[in-house]
Image (cartoon, rainbow, N blue to C red):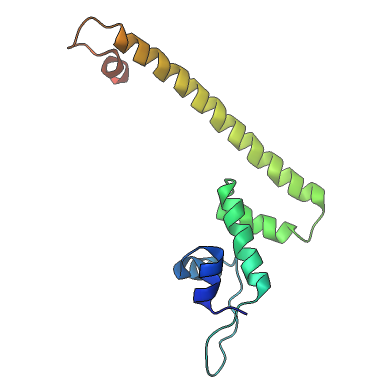
Length: 127
């Protein structure tokens, strides 16, 4: 059993993060006893670690909430959500690669620019 501070320490998050997850409905807040502190279980720790890992993988809190609900569902339902996330990531990667190509070209133009006063990068950003 963990107090909120021990749970936060074990999960490598702040106490406010635990409270935030509770407010968002991602983590159930234990009932406070008449005396003493709320006690969190190993399952609570597992859930916080799950949330953190899912966030690291790029899932939003809303998506994580869906994953938590789907954890009792069929694998194909979870797979569908993961495939949707993968499509979003692939689109972002395409955008980043296009941006990289543009920046590489602009940096090359800048290196080959004989004028100190007319920067190709600045020129490309102007309307």
